[in-house]
Image 1 (cartoon, rainbow, N blue to C red):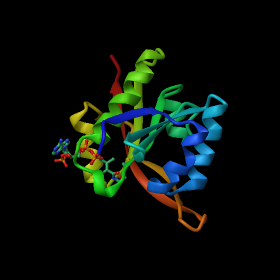
Image 2 (cartoon, rainbow, N blue to C red):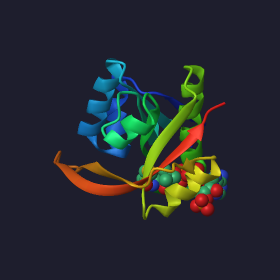
Image 3 (cartoon, rainbow, N blue to C red):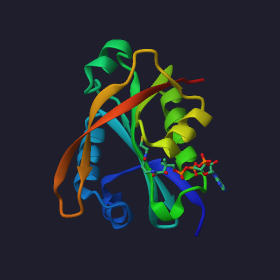
Image 4 (tube, protein in one colour):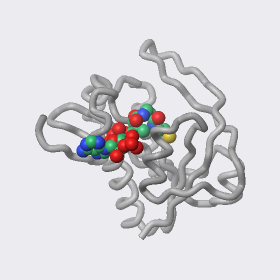
Length: 166
Ligand SMILES: CC(C)(COP(=O)(O)OP(=O)(O)OC[C@H]1O[C@@H](n2cnc3c(N)ncnc32)[C@H](O)[C@@H]1OP(=O)(O)O)[C@@H](O)C(=O)NCCC(=O)NCCS
């Protein structure tokens, strides 16, 4: 593998992203949102292979609790690393890249939701200084994109974690 690089995705990246990460409909949607200034799609590359991604949600949150308690706060969503490249620091680097970008753009904090049973991700966030907010768990809807293009909506109860930037 060559050097690792994390950068903002562009439309030309889509075929390579789908090649290793799948979820073509998801990434096409997020690139379209990015075009309108509603978000930021960061992708980790090793040589020509996309090995992970995170989408920074800059639009108003879909969950009313988040809009009430964290108005205007960017949300980190869909952090993932391909299974065969996990436990090598890529998830941590993606988080760091998103946080640095937000800090540079003047954001003071960032938040995210993590499923109650997703202990691997919870350890990662806590190590990076994320702490649970005091307003309780939040019922969210997870959109699962299947390889055949089907979209499945699944309820997911999340812990909301917040980190101050800078
Ligand atoms: C959560 C997820 C993104 C983490 O990605 P990752 O690249 O494995 O994360 P990291 O490598 O930075 O950290 C994972 C572990 O590897 C360890 N690690 C980091 N760099 C390492 C290295 N160079 N060598 C050995 N171990 C390393 C970390 O200490 C951490 O240890 P832990 O499991 O004891 O907490 C990944 O597991 C994933 O894609 N999960 C499925 C999707 C998901 O649940 N996303 C979160 C939604 S909220």
